Length: 366
Image (cartoon, rainbow, N blue to C red; front, side):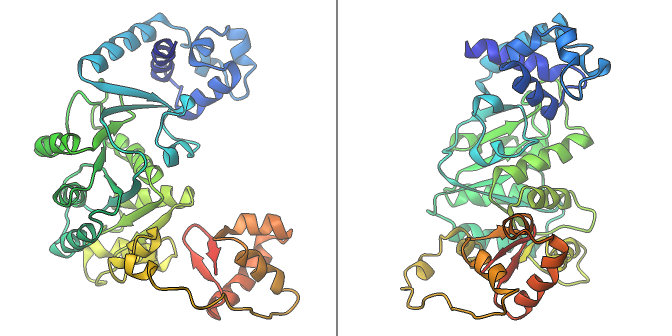
Protein backbone atom coordinates (compact mmCIF):
# COMPACT_ATOMS: atom_id res chain seq x y z
CA UNK A 1 0.00 0.00 0.00
CA UNK A 2 1.14 3.53 -0.81
CA UNK A 3 0.38 4.72 2.74
CA UNK A 4 2.74 2.09 4.13
CA UNK A 5 5.42 3.16 1.70
CA UNK A 6 5.00 6.79 2.74
CA UNK A 7 5.20 5.81 6.42
CA UNK A 8 8.42 3.82 6.03
CA UNK A 9 9.92 6.44 3.70
CA UNK A 10 9.49 9.17 6.31
CA UNK A 11 10.91 6.91 9.03
CA UNK A 12 13.87 5.94 6.87
CA UNK A 13 14.65 9.52 5.81
CA UNK A 14 14.39 10.70 9.44
CA UNK A 15 16.98 8.11 10.50
CA UNK A 16 20.37 9.71 11.34
CA UNK A 17 22.96 9.53 8.53
CA UNK A 18 20.37 8.49 5.91
CA UNK A 19 20.35 11.35 3.41
CA UNK A 20 18.70 11.43 0.01
CA UNK A 21 21.46 9.53 -1.80
CA UNK A 22 21.71 6.77 0.83
CA UNK A 23 17.93 6.57 0.90
CA UNK A 24 17.83 5.80 -2.82
CA UNK A 25 20.62 3.23 -2.45
CA UNK A 26 18.48 1.44 0.12
CA UNK A 27 15.50 1.52 -2.24
CA UNK A 28 17.65 0.05 -5.03
CA UNK A 29 18.87 -2.70 -2.72
CA UNK A 30 15.52 -3.60 -1.14
CA UNK A 31 12.93 -2.53 -3.72
CA UNK A 32 10.88 -0.40 -1.32
CA UNK A 33 11.22 1.69 1.83
CA UNK A 34 9.21 -0.85 3.80
CA UNK A 35 11.49 -3.70 2.75
CA UNK A 36 14.59 -1.58 3.42
CA UNK A 37 13.34 -0.81 6.93
CA UNK A 38 13.13 -4.51 7.76
CA UNK A 39 16.49 -5.58 6.30
CA UNK A 40 18.77 -7.32 8.77
CA UNK A 41 21.98 -5.63 9.89
CA UNK A 42 23.90 -8.41 8.17
CA UNK A 43 22.32 -7.65 4.78
CA UNK A 44 22.63 -3.88 5.32
CA UNK A 45 26.38 -4.25 5.86
CA UNK A 46 26.67 -5.90 2.46
CA UNK A 47 25.37 -2.77 0.69
CA UNK A 48 28.31 -0.80 -0.68
CA UNK A 49 29.12 2.23 1.46
CA UNK A 50 26.96 1.19 4.41
CA UNK A 51 29.04 0.94 7.56
CA UNK A 52 28.00 0.44 11.21
CA UNK A 53 27.40 4.17 11.78
CA UNK A 54 24.96 4.45 8.87
CA UNK A 55 22.95 1.29 9.56
CA UNK A 56 22.87 1.71 13.35
CA UNK A 57 19.39 3.26 13.63
CA UNK A 58 17.63 1.69 10.63
CA UNK A 59 14.60 -0.16 12.00
CA UNK A 60 14.41 1.89 15.22
CA UNK A 61 10.73 2.15 16.26
CA UNK A 62 11.20 5.73 17.47
CA UNK A 63 11.49 6.92 13.88
CA UNK A 64 8.47 4.90 12.85
CA UNK A 65 6.45 6.61 15.59
CA UNK A 66 7.73 9.97 14.36
CA UNK A 67 6.60 9.07 10.83
CA UNK A 68 3.11 8.25 12.09
CA UNK A 69 2.85 11.68 13.75
CA UNK A 70 4.14 13.36 10.60
CA UNK A 71 1.49 11.66 8.46
CA UNK A 72 -1.25 12.77 10.90
CA UNK A 73 0.10 16.35 10.77
CA UNK A 74 0.08 16.33 6.96
CA UNK A 75 -3.43 14.90 6.77
CA UNK A 76 -4.78 17.58 9.15
CA UNK A 77 -3.12 20.37 7.15
CA UNK A 78 -3.91 19.16 3.61
CA UNK A 79 -0.26 18.47 2.83
CA UNK A 80 0.57 15.93 0.16
CA UNK A 81 3.60 13.68 0.61
CA UNK A 82 5.40 12.79 -2.62
CA UNK A 83 8.11 10.16 -3.01
CA UNK A 84 10.93 10.24 -5.54
CA UNK A 85 11.10 6.47 -5.92
CA UNK A 86 7.38 6.43 -6.73
CA UNK A 87 7.99 8.92 -9.59
CA UNK A 88 5.90 11.58 -7.87
CA UNK A 89 8.36 14.49 -8.00
CA UNK A 90 8.21 17.18 -10.72
CA UNK A 91 9.75 15.76 -13.88
CA UNK A 92 12.97 17.78 -14.09
CA UNK A 93 13.63 17.61 -10.35
CA UNK A 94 13.29 13.84 -10.36
CA UNK A 95 16.17 13.63 -12.86
CA UNK A 96 18.64 15.05 -10.31
CA UNK A 97 20.66 12.38 -8.53
CA UNK A 98 20.54 14.29 -5.24
CA UNK A 99 16.86 15.28 -5.49
CA UNK A 100 14.87 15.01 -2.24
CA UNK A 101 13.64 11.52 -1.45
CA UNK A 102 10.46 13.12 -0.06
CA UNK A 103 8.63 16.32 -0.94
CA UNK A 104 5.88 17.84 1.23
CA UNK A 105 3.47 19.93 -0.83
CA UNK A 106 0.69 22.32 0.14
CA UNK A 107 -1.45 23.39 -2.79
CA UNK A 108 -1.63 22.14 -6.38
CA UNK A 109 0.06 23.33 -9.57
CA UNK A 110 -0.14 22.22 -13.19
CA UNK A 111 2.95 20.11 -13.88
CA UNK A 112 2.49 20.58 -17.63
CA UNK A 113 3.49 24.24 -17.33
CA UNK A 114 7.06 25.28 -18.19
CA UNK A 115 8.92 25.93 -14.91
CA UNK A 116 11.24 28.95 -14.69
CA UNK A 117 13.30 29.58 -11.58
CA UNK A 118 13.95 33.21 -10.64
CA UNK A 119 16.50 33.94 -7.91
CA UNK A 120 18.45 36.85 -6.52
CA UNK A 121 19.38 38.97 -3.56
CA UNK A 122 17.19 39.82 -0.58
CA UNK A 123 18.40 43.40 -1.08
CA UNK A 124 16.85 43.86 -4.51
CA UNK A 125 17.10 47.25 -6.17
CA UNK A 126 14.69 49.12 -8.42
CA UNK A 127 16.76 47.90 -11.38
CA UNK A 128 16.08 44.27 -10.52
CA UNK A 129 12.43 44.84 -9.66
CA UNK A 130 11.79 46.63 -12.95
CA UNK A 131 13.35 43.74 -14.86
CA UNK A 132 11.13 41.19 -13.10
CA UNK A 133 8.02 43.30 -13.75
CA UNK A 134 8.83 43.57 -17.45
CA UNK A 135 9.75 39.89 -17.81
CA UNK A 136 6.63 38.54 -16.10
CA UNK A 137 4.38 40.91 -18.01
CA UNK A 138 5.81 39.35 -21.18
CA UNK A 139 5.27 35.83 -19.80
CA UNK A 140 1.58 36.40 -19.13
CA UNK A 141 -0.55 33.74 -20.88
CA UNK A 142 2.59 31.79 -21.86
CA UNK A 143 1.88 28.60 -19.86
CA UNK A 144 4.84 29.06 -17.53
CA UNK A 145 5.30 28.35 -13.83
CA UNK A 146 7.45 30.72 -11.77
CA UNK A 147 9.58 28.99 -9.13
CA UNK A 148 11.45 30.80 -6.36
CA UNK A 149 12.35 30.58 -2.68
CA UNK A 150 9.72 32.87 -1.08
CA UNK A 151 12.49 34.91 0.55
CA UNK A 152 12.39 38.68 0.88
CA UNK A 153 13.66 40.73 -2.05
CA UNK A 154 13.95 39.09 -5.46
CA UNK A 155 12.00 35.93 -4.54
CA UNK A 156 9.05 37.82 -3.12
CA UNK A 157 9.01 40.17 -6.11
CA UNK A 158 8.99 37.20 -8.53
CA UNK A 159 6.06 35.52 -6.75
CA UNK A 160 4.13 38.81 -6.46
CA UNK A 161 4.58 39.80 -10.10
CA UNK A 162 3.64 36.27 -11.19
CA UNK A 163 0.32 36.58 -9.36
CA UNK A 164 -0.29 40.04 -10.86
CA UNK A 165 0.02 38.47 -14.31
CA UNK A 166 -2.08 35.38 -13.48
CA UNK A 167 0.98 33.13 -13.61
CA UNK A 168 1.03 30.16 -11.24
CA UNK A 169 3.97 30.18 -8.87
CA UNK A 170 5.67 27.71 -6.51
CA UNK A 171 7.61 28.62 -3.38
CA UNK A 172 10.41 26.25 -2.32
CA UNK A 173 10.86 26.46 1.46
CA UNK A 174 13.88 25.88 3.69
CA UNK A 175 11.80 24.56 6.59
CA UNK A 176 8.78 22.43 7.38
CA UNK A 177 5.21 23.46 6.60
CA UNK A 178 4.37 23.98 10.28
CA UNK A 179 5.68 27.56 9.97
CA UNK A 180 6.14 30.20 7.28
CA UNK A 181 9.40 32.09 6.97
CA UNK A 182 9.60 34.98 6.49
CA UNK A 183 6.34 35.69 8.31
CA UNK A 184 5.82 38.80 6.16
CA UNK A 185 5.02 36.49 3.27
CA UNK A 186 2.20 34.58 4.95
CA UNK A 187 -0.51 36.41 3.00
CA UNK A 188 1.49 36.07 -0.22
CA UNK A 189 1.90 32.32 0.29
CA UNK A 190 -1.84 31.88 0.84
CA UNK A 191 -2.59 33.78 -2.37
CA UNK A 192 -0.08 31.62 -4.26
CA UNK A 193 -1.93 28.48 -3.18
CA UNK A 194 -5.36 29.96 -3.92
CA UNK A 195 -4.29 30.92 -7.46
CA UNK A 196 -3.03 27.56 -8.69
CA UNK A 197 0.38 27.45 -7.06
CA UNK A 198 1.96 25.63 -4.14
CA UNK A 199 4.50 25.58 -1.36
CA UNK A 200 6.92 22.66 -1.42
CA UNK A 201 9.68 21.54 0.90
CA UNK A 202 11.85 18.53 1.63
CA UNK A 203 11.79 19.35 5.35
CA UNK A 204 9.39 17.81 7.87
CA UNK A 205 7.39 19.59 10.57
CA UNK A 206 10.28 19.60 13.06
CA UNK A 207 12.71 21.43 10.75
CA UNK A 208 13.27 25.14 11.31
CA UNK A 209 14.73 27.60 8.75
CA UNK A 210 18.34 26.89 9.74
CA UNK A 211 21.16 28.37 7.68
CA UNK A 212 22.23 25.09 6.07
CA UNK A 213 18.65 24.39 4.98
CA UNK A 214 18.73 27.34 2.59
CA UNK A 215 21.64 25.83 0.64
CA UNK A 216 19.73 22.54 0.41
CA UNK A 217 16.66 24.48 -0.73
CA UNK A 218 18.67 26.13 -3.52
CA UNK A 219 19.40 22.80 -5.22
CA UNK A 220 15.64 22.14 -5.42
CA UNK A 221 15.05 25.58 -6.97
CA UNK A 222 17.76 24.84 -9.56
CA UNK A 223 16.64 21.27 -10.21
CA UNK A 224 12.96 22.15 -10.58
CA UNK A 225 13.44 24.13 -13.81
CA UNK A 226 15.20 23.93 -17.13
CA UNK A 227 16.05 27.63 -16.88
CA UNK A 228 17.29 29.62 -13.88
CA UNK A 229 17.34 33.42 -14.04
CA UNK A 230 19.65 35.31 -11.68
CA UNK A 231 18.39 38.87 -11.35
CA UNK A 232 20.80 40.40 -8.84
CA UNK A 233 23.40 38.91 -6.48
CA UNK A 234 26.59 39.89 -4.71
CA UNK A 235 29.75 37.80 -4.98
CA UNK A 236 28.89 35.71 -1.92
CA UNK A 237 25.11 35.68 -2.35
CA UNK A 238 23.08 32.52 -1.87
CA UNK A 239 22.08 32.65 -5.52
CA UNK A 240 25.63 31.68 -6.45
CA UNK A 241 25.00 28.22 -4.97
CA UNK A 242 21.82 27.95 -7.05
CA UNK A 243 23.89 28.70 -10.15
CA UNK A 244 26.39 25.99 -9.20
CA UNK A 245 23.60 23.44 -8.85
CA UNK A 246 22.00 24.50 -12.15
CA UNK A 247 25.36 24.16 -13.94
CA UNK A 248 25.87 20.76 -12.32
CA UNK A 249 22.46 19.64 -13.62
CA UNK A 250 23.26 21.02 -17.11
CA UNK A 251 20.37 23.47 -16.85
CA UNK A 252 20.39 26.83 -18.64
CA UNK A 253 21.31 29.87 -16.53
CA UNK A 254 20.71 33.51 -17.43
CA UNK A 255 22.02 36.51 -15.50
CA UNK A 256 21.10 40.19 -15.62
CA UNK A 257 24.29 42.26 -16.02
CA UNK A 258 24.83 45.57 -14.24
CA UNK A 259 27.40 48.21 -13.41
CA UNK A 260 30.68 46.89 -12.01
CA UNK A 261 30.28 49.35 -9.12
CA UNK A 262 26.87 47.97 -8.12
CA UNK A 263 27.33 45.41 -5.33
CA UNK A 264 24.29 43.36 -6.28
CA UNK A 265 25.30 43.12 -9.94
CA UNK A 266 28.85 41.94 -9.26
CA UNK A 267 27.84 38.28 -8.81
CA UNK A 268 25.86 38.34 -12.06
CA UNK A 269 28.74 39.94 -13.94
CA UNK A 270 31.11 37.31 -12.55
CA UNK A 271 29.09 34.25 -13.62
CA UNK A 272 28.57 35.78 -17.07
CA UNK A 273 32.34 36.33 -17.43
CA UNK A 274 32.98 32.74 -16.29
CA UNK A 275 30.55 31.37 -18.88
CA UNK A 276 28.37 29.99 -16.09
CA UNK A 277 25.41 32.05 -17.30
CA UNK A 278 24.18 33.63 -20.51
CA UNK A 279 23.90 37.39 -20.50
CA UNK A 280 20.41 38.89 -20.58
CA UNK A 281 20.34 41.75 -23.05
CA UNK A 282 16.58 42.10 -22.88
CA UNK A 283 13.69 40.19 -21.26
CA UNK A 284 12.73 38.75 -24.66
CA UNK A 285 15.95 36.66 -24.50
CA UNK A 286 14.21 34.42 -21.99
CA UNK A 287 11.19 33.95 -24.26
CA UNK A 288 13.51 33.07 -27.13
CA UNK A 289 15.22 30.43 -24.98
CA UNK A 290 11.87 28.88 -24.06
CA UNK A 291 10.51 29.10 -27.60
CA UNK A 292 7.75 31.42 -26.43
CA UNK A 293 8.52 34.47 -28.55
CA UNK A 294 5.54 34.42 -30.89
CA UNK A 295 6.84 37.17 -33.16
CA UNK A 296 10.06 35.26 -33.71
CA UNK A 297 8.26 31.95 -34.09
CA UNK A 298 6.00 33.39 -36.79
CA UNK A 299 8.94 34.38 -39.00
CA UNK A 300 9.32 31.74 -41.74
CA UNK A 301 12.63 29.92 -41.82
CA UNK A 302 13.91 30.90 -45.26
CA UNK A 303 17.45 29.65 -44.82
CA UNK A 304 18.90 26.20 -44.45
CA UNK A 305 21.76 25.81 -41.96
CA UNK A 306 25.08 26.79 -43.48
CA UNK A 307 27.22 24.06 -44.92
CA UNK A 308 30.70 24.73 -43.59
CA UNK A 309 33.76 23.01 -45.00
CA UNK A 310 36.56 22.53 -42.49
CA UNK A 311 39.73 20.47 -42.39
CA UNK A 312 39.43 16.74 -41.80
CA UNK A 313 40.40 17.05 -38.13
CA UNK A 314 37.78 19.68 -37.30
CA UNK A 315 34.92 18.69 -39.63
CA UNK A 316 33.76 15.62 -37.60
CA UNK A 317 33.64 17.76 -34.45
CA UNK A 318 31.52 20.43 -36.12
CA UNK A 319 29.25 17.81 -37.73
CA UNK A 320 28.68 16.06 -34.40
CA UNK A 321 27.60 19.33 -32.79
CA UNK A 322 25.38 20.16 -35.78
CA UNK A 323 23.58 16.82 -35.48
CA UNK A 324 22.46 17.64 -31.93
CA UNK A 325 20.34 20.47 -30.59
CA UNK A 326 23.09 20.87 -28.02
CA UNK A 327 25.78 18.54 -26.73
CA UNK A 328 28.05 18.50 -23.69
CA UNK A 329 31.83 18.36 -23.82
CA UNK A 330 31.80 14.93 -22.18
CA UNK A 331 29.27 13.50 -24.65
CA UNK A 332 31.19 14.98 -27.58
CA UNK A 333 34.40 13.44 -26.26
CA UNK A 334 32.74 10.04 -25.86
CA UNK A 335 31.14 10.05 -29.32
CA UNK A 336 34.30 11.13 -31.12
CA UNK A 337 36.75 9.27 -28.87
CA UNK A 338 38.78 12.47 -28.47
CA UNK A 339 39.96 13.55 -24.98
CA UNK A 340 38.34 16.77 -23.69
CA UNK A 341 41.71 18.56 -23.41
CA UNK A 342 42.22 18.08 -27.17
CA UNK A 343 38.69 19.18 -28.00
CA UNK A 344 38.73 22.42 -25.98
CA UNK A 345 41.15 24.47 -28.17
CA UNK A 346 39.32 23.34 -31.33
CA UNK A 347 35.95 24.27 -29.82
CA UNK A 348 37.30 27.66 -28.76
CA UNK A 349 38.54 28.33 -32.31
CA UNK A 350 35.13 27.33 -33.75
CA UNK A 351 33.42 29.60 -31.24
CA UNK A 352 35.67 32.58 -32.06
CA UNK A 353 34.84 32.08 -35.74
CA UNK A 354 31.13 32.06 -34.83
CA UNK A 355 30.68 28.54 -36.22
CA UNK A 356 29.38 27.23 -32.88
CA UNK A 357 28.02 28.67 -29.63
CA UNK A 358 29.28 27.80 -26.16
CA UNK A 359 26.52 27.48 -23.57
CA UNK A 360 26.70 27.25 -19.79
CA UNK A 361 27.60 23.88 -18.29
CA UNK A 362 30.13 23.12 -21.08
CA UNK A 363 27.36 22.63 -23.64
CA UNK A 364 27.72 23.46 -27.33
CA UNK A 365 25.34 24.09 -30.22
CA UNK A 366 25.31 25.56 -33.73
